[in-house]
Image (cartoon, rainbow over all chains, first blue to last red; front, side, top):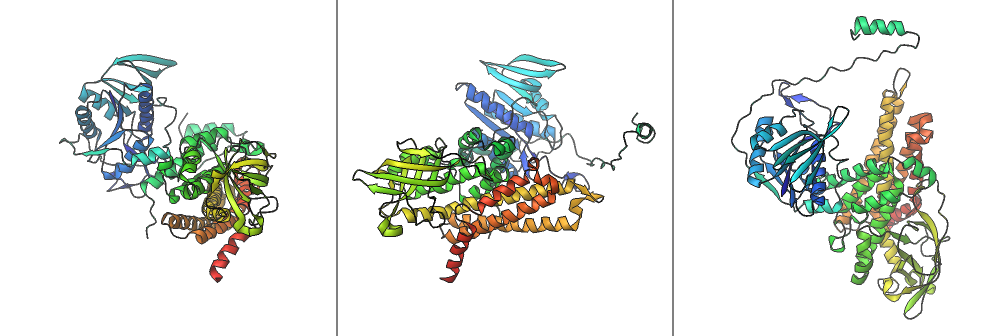
Length: 249
Length: 379
């Protein structure tokens, strides 16, 4: 049995976002790239499942759709413990395009378990996992916050209003994971970093498909106005401002 | 010339940063207050391979270069110098000394578990009356035929309690001066070894520092490192690399203080604006940043020379002296920028200032580094 974890590289979450090309594209100059945090947690859980499987899971593979600049991020996933990696040599233009590419990776690699993060921290589309499951016709669950392999079945947990629910699913299976799937991402060990040099990183050409969406314009959120302070005895003035100026109450 | 780090070096830097922030920061103030050794954290640090990161994979180490080591030391030292110094002693002194000068049998028996982080090492050179003048060793190892009989006291020993493997420098023939000095591998569990109390230090308080007393300790002949009389050369060559570790530690203390000063100066307001907008503060930050960058470049140059198998002894003295001295200056200014908050423990900079002081003293004082540097200029 093999697990595929789909990873994307995203700007470090502390990056100051700027746009270029008439506000149609992200300005990537000076950006520090990281593994999308949800994907990193998915990878952590995939490795834990492999380690607990007693050999039933033979390998954890990571796959990404991206140009060669994504390879340092892929190497980090290998350093953390992934056994091998696949890079589809094409820019990740939209969710449909990425899902079609990853579907091809899953089919050609024979992966029975696929894991994706809930969304990516760059465009937050939250679409690839669902599209990929549909393209593969795999059983799927979204918002998975715990996951284990029980023989040939998946036991998955989700947070629901006021509690959690536990579900069971047959393989092949695709999990769209979120907070809780793993406690924290693993820090790569020296040995892992050293071994990542030689682990297989296969580069495959993209399959021919188009995009379904196009970015028209990006806009930054409005900057926050200056903070106004009210003394403890100015409650009436505060209410007046919230009601008449901010129109919040 | 290329100032770019490799992707692997950046990965190690990030791993060290993540480890320091996740594992070392949360209880650093408590550990400092109670002089508590970071046992759990050191175990994790060992599992990640940081304690043997420069040792060859042939001996179960990480096989990383000295540049990576500098980057990792800086990140760990930004948060916790007590942990950083134990990492420096393991990597720069004990593992490197054994790998470079040990016999194959010594490497198999002692280096491998050290490189895997299963055991911790300590380097025992300083004595009550032999600090900077390392030739004045009073610890003796008398040749008894099959073994040496070790007697004496060592002072200020980092990792003295947590270590299992000691590298001990002792006189075997005092009449021969420094040519009568030898280095030995000594197991702490052997009979005749006792530890003094934990030293109650000004800084690096959770580092495990003790004196160590040897009373008729039998050291097998095969545990001597190198030819008879090699001990002083062994100590000096090993300390050349040790200086890179401590220089990187001082660099981390300084850059950690700078980062905290920048952050605080952008938050704290005085006279209607954030204090970073006052030139008096902004210029302090500029001066601190230039010093930190200079120290970093010296550390990296010494590391690069070591990796290129060039003679790096003098450059490591440059790096150690400069980084230690500016660490003291930069941390003092960081406390000043924090004002009253800098003088309390919650803001960390007072601890960094206490830690900086030790980097000017141990593994060769700043004055000793200047002796090394000036002699190289005048010979």
